[in-house]
Amino acid sequence: MDVSSWFFEGWAPVFKTVAVGLSSYVSLIAMLRISGKRTLSKMNMFDWVVTVAMGSVMASALVSEGVTYVQTMAAYLTLIGAQWVVTTLSVRSSAFADIVKAPPTILFYHGTYYEAAMLRERVPKSEILGAIRQNAQGAPSQVAAVLLESNGELVVMNKVDADQSPTLEAAGNYAHVKGVT
Image (cartoon, rainbow, N blue to C red; front, side, top):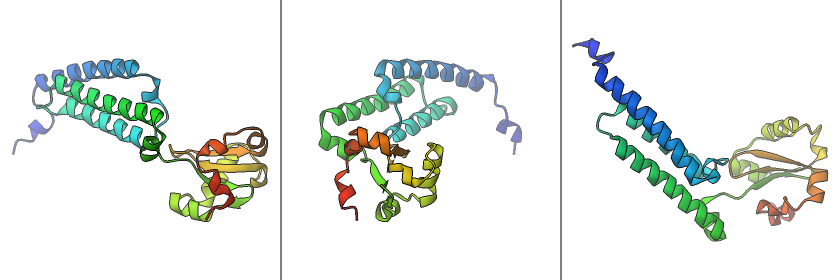
């Protein structure tokens, strides 16, 4: 068994990795720039899948001998195109958006923890309290609501903001506040 091939098989594969890596990187940046800011926004589930898939494509391009630069670009264009179609349809159709994106979930509202929502979303009380502390709210009594956004972020709304803003209603399931199970 020749273990030396585990570490080095010549300069050609190294040069291919560098050349394809740099060209793929530059091309990906250009494609992301052309596709618009939405492609790089905070991630929901679909955006996360696209991001992971792009990383896998880049890894395959860098270390797989059978993957060409053109195949890599085709894969990038496919993923970015799919993401563009999904976000465009989400903007134009609320029914489609509901399928692709999870609505925000209210976990805490005016002193009440919504245990069923916390269990369903797998968010312990300690994480809600941590989000309240991180947002410089001294105590839960100073908070109007804590929401779990579709990107997994816990958003804390203080009472002043919630009372003066329709953003809580825009959370998508405000109706559940009055009758959360």
